[in-house]
Image (cartoon, rainbow, N blue to C red; front, side, top):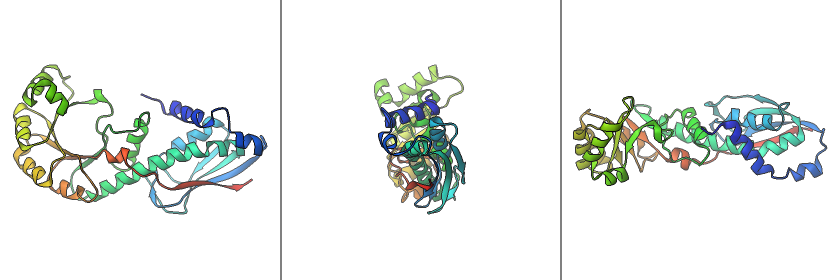
Length: 276
């Protein structure tokens, strides 16, 4: 698993290259100051520890005083954190720290909106593996901060038979037979289906979780009746804030949403020097 500290170092090196030439030309090396990280809109905070790590990686002597913790709702104009240290460290770390904060807070915020939309139902909102390369650990963390749950973190976390696996095996029944013969005893078998006929075949073959992929609401409702509690049900594909409530009402157990990580908008956060 890619360590967060390694990721922060990589991103700082990517941004610094041969050094911060602007600070080198303008800011005395020993000059110190104070800065505040400020919310420019309302959002759910995510990634505050990563932002602190950015500055502490540049210089452990930077003081990073947080005013909020991950998972809290932040109002516009609120100060998220106060920093004190050498101006060169504060200015050099600004962009990388804000990149993490804005991106992860965006994921947490979008996730919370979906979670709130189904709060009246006993259901879990799940993420997917549609994550930014290198950022999966942090993006899935941000989903949890927003109140969602993680689906598979990696391919070894669960057996999910998708359309191409089914095609490669010659059908759902054949794929299930192979899976049952080889699966570790601690894992459950999930099968992706696209029609009611495939739903019935997956149930009869012994699937423990059935993923309804890109099905219409009418088909989801029919599938729930057909499965009749013989397997857990996950709905996936085409889920939006407009229809997630209706999908939850249909009686599924899980709703997985790739957009939580691949389409969340970065929230607006800035850093401003307040003392020099």
